[in-house]
Image (cartoon, rainbow over all chains, first blue to last red; front, side, top):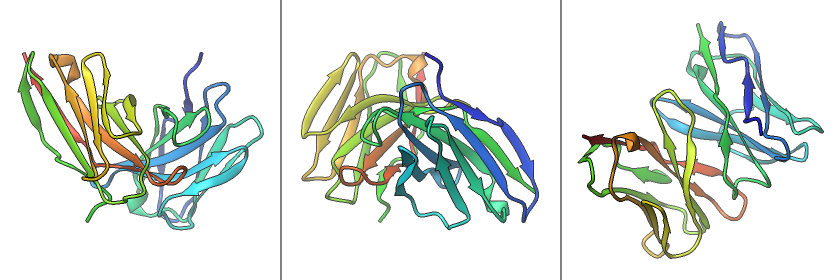
Amino acid sequence: KAGVTQTPRYLIKTRGQQVTLSCSPISGHRSVSWYQQTPGQGLQFLFEYFSETQRNKGNFPGRFSGRQFSNSRSEMNVSTLELGDSALYLCASSLEGLNNEQFFGPGTRLTVL
Amino acid sequence: QKEVEQNSGPLSVPEGAIASLNCTYSDRVSQSFFWYRQYSGKSPELIMSIYSNGDKEDGRFTAQLNKASQYVSLLIRDSQPSDSATYLCAVLRGSQGNLIFGKGTKLSVKP
C-alpha cells in the first residue's frame, strides 16, 4: 500500500501571500489531519477532516483552513502568510479518526520570507 | 500548565539499558494516549497506544498509564542505538477531540 503523500515537499513564499498544500491519504483511510511542527512549539494539531467535514479543530487563527474531497484527499490553505508560519506541515491519515493510529506523510517545508 | 508535558532531554542511556520516558497531561477527560517516535528529519511513527490504566507491552516497549495521576510513560528495554530518536507523547482529549502532542524527549542510546 502506498503511504501518505504530500505535495509540494518544499515551498518558499513571501509575507502576505497565500499557499495551498495537498495531502493524499492511504487508500481506505477516511480521516485526514494536519499538523504544524516548529522547533519552538513542537507538533501542533491544526484540524481533522472526515467524510469531507471538518470534525475537529486546533487553536489556530482563521487564516488556516482546509477541505477534504470525496476521494479523501485533503488540502490545507494558509492566507496572508506571516513569518511565523514558516514550519513543517505534516498531514496524517487514519482509518476512522484521531483515536486510531495516525500515519504521517513526509511533510511540506514552508518558508515565509 | 502545558496540556502535555515531557522532559525535553536529552536522555542518554547505554546500550542494553532500560530507557524510561515520562509524560504528564492536564485534561482529566483524556481517554487515549499514544507514543510516537520521530527520527531526525523524518515523520513521526506510532510506537504504542494505550487506553486503560495499567501496563501494555509490545516487544521491548511497555506503555504505562495512570489516569488518577494523569501520567503516562514508555519503557524501552534492551535499548539499542537504533532507538535514538525523539519520542512524542500524544493525548486525545475526549473521545474525538484535539490530539495534543508534547514537545518530545530526545533519547540517545550510546553503544
